[in-house]
Image (tube, rainbow over all chains, first blue to last red; front, side):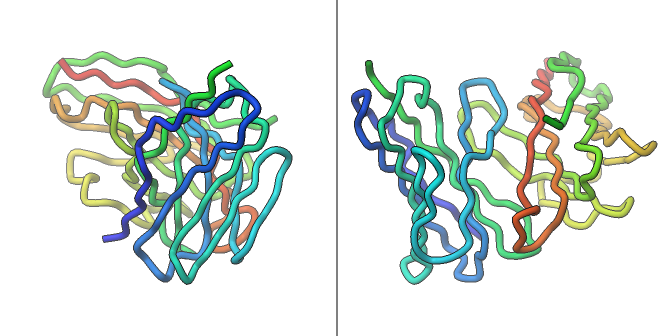
Length: 110
Length: 117
């Protein structure tokens, strides 16, 4: 059984701060890693994906992957109130289906 | 920007009734999926579909569920005899590719909220 674990939160940060969201996964064969953002009552929206160990930056977002530790993280710099949402970590092992974590709720206060 | 569209946005049905949820995937995508999310819980995989057949399904996807691509654009999920526990948000998704590729990203529709009474 493939598991993706996330702290449910909420993670509260002030506006302008860095938010750090973490995820661990159980399947060592996992190859592709995704971060989705989900606003309440809405569908998941892809914000980042990463395949290789290390960091990948896209605007205010940085995804970090450590396959040895089976750990993925998402950093959000200069957090804005509009970033307040649930962040879903999702993992796939090549041709297998996408497995989601339960998500971490982020609250950014003005 | 291309998007996955789902209809209806809300569906209310009586227990034991059949429902059909409809989706139009992104036009050049080849892989189609249904996921569901019970309120407060995680997004769960139901089924994937490629080349007019099911490629993978979860244990949730039992004999009460079926999928179909009746024409070149629609992708449907049918629940034959709904149960109370089928109440959830159902998301359709599509991707251009499978496997480790920048085109394997899943794009989700806005969902159908199914309420079984």
